[in-house]
Image 1 (cartoon, chains in turn purple, green):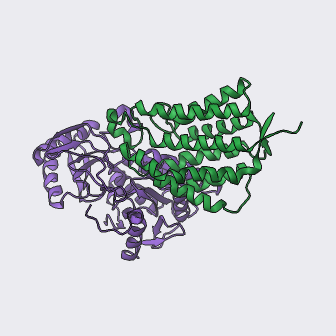
Image 2 (cartoon, rainbow over the protein chains, first blue to last red):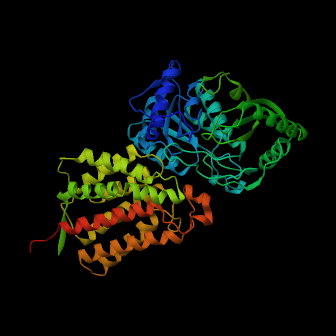
Image 3 (cartoon, chains in turn red, orange):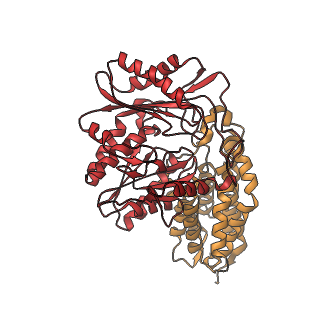
Length: 329
Length: 217
């Protein structure tokens, strides 16, 4: 294991210290060591909170900022934050107009958010949730409630955060964040495994010369293990299930291609060129494309593709100003 | 008629803390076969903190279980914090303001824990998880208690149900948690959560049995 760490058991706390030191204009510490809040001035608005396991940086904490999330709960690597952490994030974000908790569909997160909500209610904090389920490989369309949340979460934070920033009330922020993530279809491909430092050995294995189509952000099993061919056909394998998931033809879309941590940025853009060709061939207009490491899985090689169907309501929220570590507009 | 004086909370809790700390490496080893390998580390972290916070205090059983629940929920994230947290919170709530538990009240405590856990998770028996230990153990205990067995015999049923349930996970294919990735290959290995649940229930039964007293006539 070739890693830049101290005690493997303290990786998350040590990393949080680094984020605080590096970006004091974005992050402020709270009483909870696993909760960060936006350091800037926040007017009276609906609070936006997210949270999840570590190892996906810049998610989740990289989406705290202006026009995005106000506070984040930070878990161990690939493990949900505690209910206490979510509760403290709610407290940090609440300005009396309620809190929108926008997170992904994983068992641990669901349970911890549920308990934190119950505790928040006892304190008079109104918390509503949107649970992202955009990974088309994790369950068929008629079992959407079983799908995992992946990089579509970023569009959910962007839209929900922009709605909150312009002063929408809690019900409206929730409606728009839900609409945003429902408009997203995503898929991942994995080319190699990843190692949790405290664990010391790879979480799973992918044979050299192969890729796993539909792999999850923690190595959850995909649709199929296929030979690793070239970028042209990889783009096709990714576009097919995504474009089959919703009727995108003739629409404007936002596209997000994220690396999983160890795939060079150059290859992500190379891959995107082929994705753009596919979309063009289907009469789909790309309104905006974001290519980079937006939602990773430690040092996995691979990428995710998210296509989001836009309309006149979503478009200005996707384009609205934002300032954070991960995205700035 | 035998009863468990609920003033022994700290003592029973310390026994539960001990069994997890004693088995820290074993639990991580079991988990390492098909999971992340961090079950022992996480559980030991939560139980050690609880042990520290109750040290030197004389807590009633309900209060001690409640302290364990909030410590676990506050210190272990993932799925184990809320699962064990709600189990012990449900047990704690079921015996609030009770000075003594008879064989039935102890069963109500177990059921209260199971109900609370099922309120927060959709996991089912057969998923290869801690419910595979908990459900048969609680069922066996209640069956023994309802058929008129005495307290020690019911506690023995709890132990045996836990052992049998835990062992049943060896042949199951994981449907939830990280082991689900392995599918068929998860067979042949015990589930780490089922093992920690077995250790806790057996130690709970042992400890309760030691504290059983004869009610004054």
